[in-house]
Image (cartoon, rainbow, N blue to C red; front, top):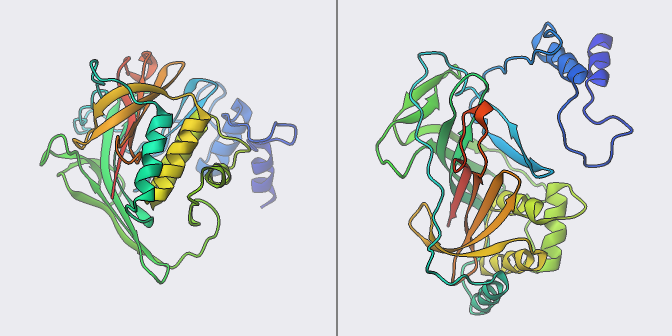
Length: 333
């Protein structure tokens, strides 16, 4: 046990003198020690370890740090050799109508508040989301991982999660999945990845706790959910996605989120767009170095419909070009 504890201390990604909430990779020594602890022999200095195949349910995660893309590659589906099944074609970026007059976020927030005053749908715990995530590795071409996820909660605190491999752009076309041993294989559209029921959970911390429907309180809630002292535009978009992956917002909560987005600033109104599920929306764009994030919102109610992240600069080391969609999520009721 002493050896393992010593390895953990030396692999600590957050040393005592590090600034709070600092995100970043391990240094080379820390990476080698952590790899040794988890996987066995330490790789040679200067040579990164080959990632191990991920288990079922692991999704590709993305972060934005100092305006640069930081890819966290999870990739059972990316490490195959010549026998790896063909990848699903990456979706193209959504196109904003050039002749459409953009609606400001402040105006859209006013519409959302008016819609909430007239009633509208109620808040519901759980989510229904379709997503496309671009997976990358050093030794395989990028692939798009499409899935649909439905989470529903019961009154006694239990919840169910159903995740299927699906690509609504090509109904019935096979997509990528995993076999029982976690190896990549081609599966039919609609193949069940996860179908599980989980025991009661009574967490009272965000995002498990009920979100408020007032913009100021919602900001504090999302800061706690993201474990950050403040929300800039990029962090707010991440927090909104986290919220929508756990809750189906009602009219009042959607209005609060729209107001929070408007008050934070940084999102440029771009015009009308049709989302990947065929719904009309208003697009709002936030750009940093190499990346464009587009938020799609319902033009009448201010509800968030989707969030798209696109490369604006090529990343040849990962085989991606400018215009490739990094990730897209579309939320429905």
